[in-house]
Image (cartoon, rainbow, N blue to C red; front, top):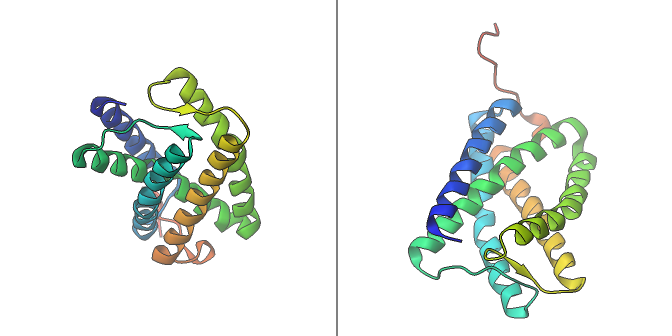
Length: 172
């Protein structure tokens, strides 16, 4: 992955984040919580990429310069943050049962998403054959979503106690 590609994808995820903030009607406190959740998850995500690369389950060729790794970290944090706003809304509506369903969904759809990306852009990611890389990828998704949601909850409080931001044009 080149720096330019990373910048494009980070920008696209930032636009997605702004759209999710708007559609979930998240308060400033909740937006901050989602961003902090993404920031906390960024480092373990990079560590997992390095660990599974050493194990040989998948390989993500990263340029090991401080600038590129910093940009990759920021991109990872921004790309994860919208997920936490969605899990917040689900948890607000359905409680921990809804959150459990979200974790199951990311465990199921995460690996096919990554395998699709790897098939389109093999220079970004290559998976080893077998079931172990699929299970590790699935577990990584569950860990990223669970950890980020927990951090967001610590920063912004429980979902059920949160109010929604008012929409423009609505009276008090």
